[in-house]
Image (cartoon, rainbow, N blue to C red):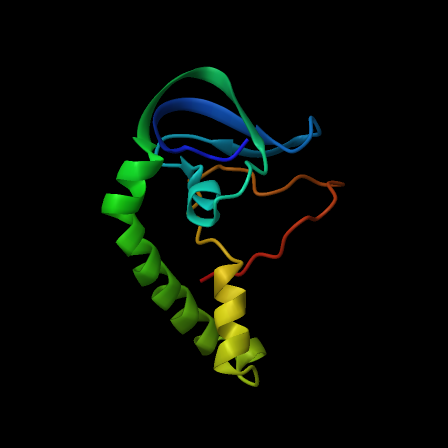
Length: 129
């Protein structure tokens, strides 16, 4: 389904999984999800389910684009600058870096959150900034 809402976790615990496989991530207070589907008008890429009772702030697609959408441009500028500071990308053209920025997401992780599990197939590349 194409995403119509953006979520902010206020309390509780949610699990993220892809196609019914192992848990990819555990989200707690302060975690955000649903943004990529809104930004790129694409179907949801993961399933999120409630592990412990939770309270979420839910923002509609319309309100997100009206109020938070402009922050996406700022987010892109920040990511572009961060990529430009990494020596691995110093030989890349601005166009190549901009393309990379378009296909990345800034994500904050809470203390104790699991990023991946031993033996899990890697589906993404992470940069610590």
